[in-house]
Image (tube, rainbow, N blue to C red; front, side, top):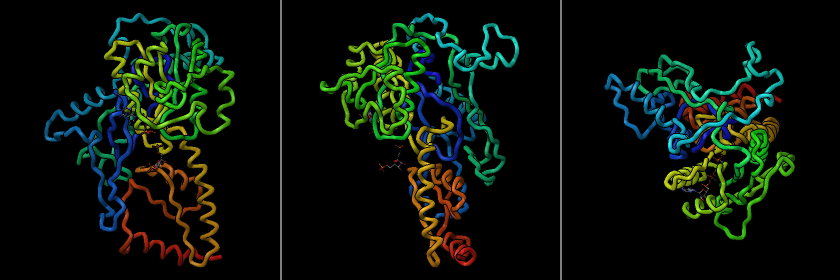
Length: 396
Ligand SMILES: Nc1ncnc2c1ncn2[C@@H]1O[C@H](COP(=O)(O)OP(=O)(O)O)[C@@H](O)[C@H]1O
Ligand SMILES: O=P(O)(O)OC[C@H]1O[C@](O)(COP(=O)(O)O)[C@@H](O)[C@@H]1O
């Protein structure tokens, strides 16, 4: 994770993943990309062979007749994903990191020369991860994601996470805050725990939990909770959030007043869309007030529908839990005459949970996901296929 070395601003912690349908949400300065599919996608009349050709940034009108559109597109992408740094606003002197590489493996030695030893070095600020690795040559290629009818490939790079050689906060003087907001998601306690432990590796001693999300900043009856290795050691063994969650607004200026009064230098905010819209508003207000405060967003969604993440936390648990529903439906359907089991899984507008649960179960004949249109009727429709399955598989 890169948080303590991110000199500031709002940052994502994980990188790398490319997908079909995307929608830009105004969360962070770095905006986060989520999937969006047409709500009408699963209708009878939609042609099953419809091709998805969609611009990644729906709000920007790309003029494909402009010979420089690719370059413009790339520049815009880079601008969108350039993380804001405190050093862009303040005149800051970096200090050598206090993060010890030896925590990452015993092979590390100062001034290492062999490749094996160097492998565990710091992440360079200019390191980037490539977002799109496949060049589709046609919109009809399996799984094609195209931004124009010619399926042009455009470079898209995002920042690489990891510990940097230089940092901008003196860990001994830092006060860090953590909060969880919005709905619950499996893994919140694991993330809280790991933030505390990693801050400790950096040498940060003053870490506090803000109870019940943003509410903890403006509800006078709520008090911050000191966090340490001892406090968080076993919290990953229980569900929910050690800090509690809440929904309910509050004035951004009151929240920032409170952050300022508590002398918090970095705030880790775990939450979904709404929480990150709030994080962005807090970040903007901090910038307006010229406060040297680092706001770090940790995206929470069980659906795994964020473009920049390899995998969002909670997703594996959802896939694992889905197995139980699938197994029960399978046994029921297998025993019934002409039985068909239908399992509806969560995922909002993305099919990751359904697709991964299907692949790991091995008992599913048909997996329908929002990203892939289908027809119910007709010779190639779903119903015809189900008839075929009943005829051929319905044996005791
Ligand atoms: N646009 C916004 N600006 C500022 N704060 C917001 C905004 N949207 C939501 N919030 C705050 O974030 C909290 C959590 O958002 P919510 O949408 O309920 O959950 P999630 O973060 O899981 O999407 C809200 O209760 C509210 O306090
Ligand atoms: O009850 P709602 O508001 O429709 O939300 C249901 C959605 O929330 C989720 O359970 C979780 O979504 P997030 O992780 O994005 O908050 C989705 O899987 C599901 O489709």
